[in-house]
Image (cartoon, rainbow, N blue to C red; front, side, top):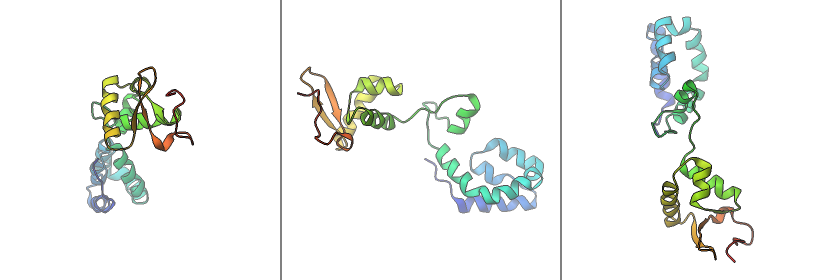
Length: 162
């Protein structure tokens, strides 16, 4: 994730008063409005003045948008322009699925929920188990499941294991 600085954004905002409007927006990855500000004098200074007060929010949004939500590496801002839906990270899908299933999940359930391959999910689940975030368990049927202690029921048992 690219770490955008509020201080740097304000420093790049200052040249707006000397005919170089939009530099702060270019820095924050808002290319379209940055170019628009450059050619219109910061929307005739109205946009520039607005940005002075909105800068903390603009920096937060840019930090969020810099996360890679897509396999292609497109940010959330570009996704909304082309009508796409951001793809949740594999960890987020795993945790959401585990929580919905009272702490127990399988690679197949996560793959179905998050549009990932079963192999991708299996590798990530094994990685999480190796780091101590999950436990690998085997049901009587021979199915491998992953238990997340944070989401397990009070007894900590998987009703399908026995």
